[in-house]
Length: 340
Image (spheres, rainbow, N blue to C red):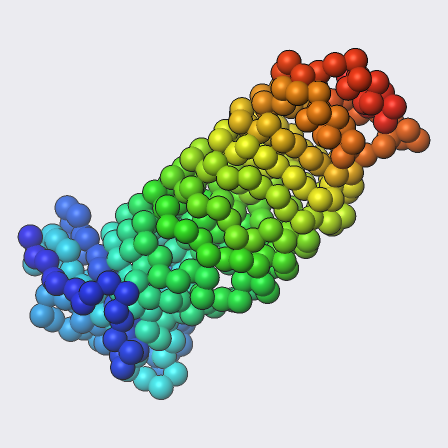
């Protein structure tokens, strides 16, 4: 089986503007460069080093769907470079793209710009810092990269403090467990599904300011290995907490500083058996804490104190469990016009 040695990881050639990837053709003898990866510029032209000692030239428009063919199935290093001044290259996979599963490493981005690697389920390593097509929208950027274990300096890919939408950005990165060093998501409005099904991830998130978050649906769902406290600065723009922490069972504490505008929170804590400290300030939606580990009167009273006072509003229901519920808790809840 053909195999090509690579330069050391994290060492792209600073003098080269080539887009360099490693592919594994599997049982086939081809790799499909899809239209989604190529700009529709009839002046654009690309030279492709196939990694088997041969080169081909691709025209940006007429050859926008192109198969690299090989004499034998195997692993190859493919290098793509522009052969025209206006040539650009867009990495824009989707989960149903032909041969997305054959991409196994990105050694260098070069002149290529990244939109999404959605569905590159066998991609294990990204050894260079990406230039993004849109620095404020990273929706699905690494979605379903199920085998990914190494990303070079993800925190440097963009100014994360300006990212507005990261829906499904890291969804189903099942194997990833390098620390994500992003420390500012203060502009993030849409975090829906952002970290869902990151089954292996267990490093404390550095960001705590989610003051622009509107949609947190499933944001940390099924993070089954994560065991750190979550304390977030939120605001009255937050409306959706459906499945926020569903089945993220090792998290011991959740504090949200502002929940006054939350209108929907279906199963937001379902399966969170280790939460023993819970504060949801201004929360005014039916709440079920039966799977949480709230076992002292003090913890229940702290939670009740954080809930919205519904005296002048229709009551809501707090469904609770644990051994720490007392008559004092029932009285405190009733005084806020919540149903027990």
